[in-house]
Each structure stands twice: as C-alpha cells, then as structure tokens.
Image (cartoon, rainbow, N blue to C red):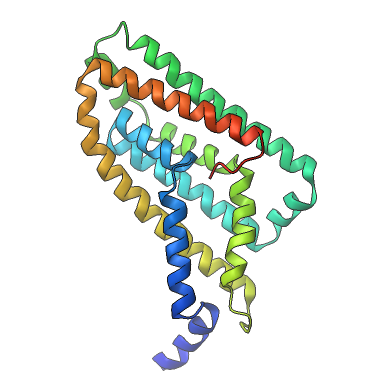
Length: 227
C-alpha cells in the first residue's frame, strides 16, 4: 500500500539529480545577500532572536503567497502587464526606502540615547510589527513573484500528470528550505548581537542597515533584482 502511495509523489517531484540541483540553487539564492537576508540580520541585531524569527516568518509567509500566485497563474499576469509590475516595483522600492531612512534616523537618535534605552524599546516592540515588515518587504518585491514563475517550472517533471500540484510541492520545498536557512541566520546574528553593547557599534549597525536598504531601493527602481 505504501508503494502505491509513494508512486504519485515520486512522479510529482524531480529525480535525484534534479532535486540536488534544486536544493543547491535554493541555498545559493538564500545565501546571496538581498532584502530578505539583510532584513533578517538587521532585525535580529536590533531586536534579538525574537525579532529576527518574527521577520523570517513574515518573509516566508510572503514566499507562500508568491508560490501560490505563481502556481495559479497570477504571476504570469504581472509579466503580461508591465504597468502593474511597475506600480508594485515602485511600492516595494518606496517601502525599502522608508525602512532605510528609519534605520538612519535611529542611528542619529542613538548618538544621544544610552544603549540600554534602545534595547528596552526593542524588547517591547510587538512581534507582529517585525512579522508585518518581513511580509511586506517580500510581497512588495515583484521580482520574487517572477522568480517563482521562471525558476520552479524548470524542475517540474515533464511527464507529471498534475503540473500545478508539482509546482506547489516545489514551492513548499522552497519555503521550508528558505525558512531553515533564515533560522540558522537568526542564530548566527543573535550571537553577534552582543556587539550592540557598544554604542558606537550599535549606531554603525543602524547606519549600515539603513544605507543597504536605501541602496536596495535604488536597485529595485533601476530594475535590478533585489531578492
């Protein structure tokens, strides 16, 4: 009975070699510094592991939405309607710019506030705020939607009887692997967060994060990927 149930799943997923290539490609994508990577690190350094996990959960929730949209053809509509794509790209760039300027303002405030006060503010920040930030940064990046549309179909078995289900399974794989990577990233960044005991280092982290997000916003406006 088990062999009968395993056969359909085997037919829906790529073979061993293709699966290894898929896992490697997903890892390279996650490990390449981009919006999701930088947001997870910056929120962990500023608010601790709890803030980093909340941001990562929001990012992964956005990936789920993108995977579902791509599987059911919504991402294809973005590709066919440049005006809609452009509007979403502008909205995403504006949001990244807002985040970056906010970090730069925090860097300026920390010049006149003790580190303990900053840590206290971060600890009382609701987890939903970080989750929402992760969700919006991911959803407002149309490049992610087009990435799902262009990347996942390459690994859908040609002879599968249900391409939509195969697409969804690959999307779930992508989301789970991405979440595990972000959790490992949070663990590493949480150890580094001890550096924030220094006011100078704390201000530098905020300023660096702000400049990076502003730079990503400008790249997105120029049409370059900001995954």
